[in-house]
Image (cartoon, rainbow, N blue to C red; front, side, top):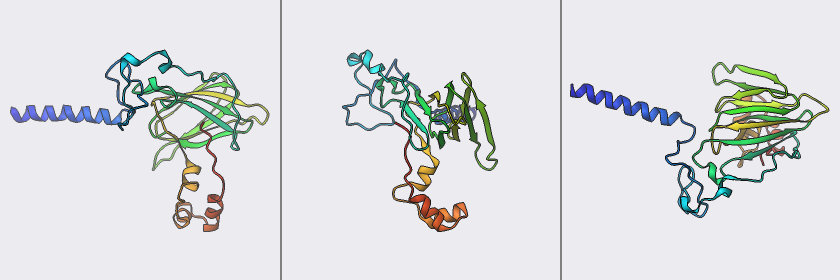
Length: 225
């Protein structure tokens, strides 16, 4: 009987640990945990400010998200509002971004290691898609128009492209983490510092080393601001 009870307790604890491991961000244990920017302590997230010192500005940013942004050479600009901009987002598991697309611009293939993304098109048309994990690598894509919504599951490679050669597009994205992170595939593979060995990349992509050398010599610009 004792053995059976111990097993049930162990199973319950294992389920609890597994659930926490799957959570994108830890759940808050109080109303809020505003970032204490002066704390020297390093934790997974940020140390809380004394609640008595919290005010409305800790939950506010004059972000001007209604204003268009200048796009870069790939034709996009991602304006991210996360815990680094609004300290009150700490432990709340959410952030948001405005994405501007030039005509024929794109938010190139990338992944968010800590967040699922839900995208809403505010202006224009976007061709979007994501690829599932190995071994299937199934490609799912859709053309979105103004008012349409699309979900990119956590960790999967995805992109958005404005197919209109004459008009820009705008979208708003909500992400399920206070700090979702972004890994742009081309930047990470060909623009790492120090660079990945061209022997490794030539073998991985099954191309000549001079092709890899040319790619690594390009300027891989960040589009997150």
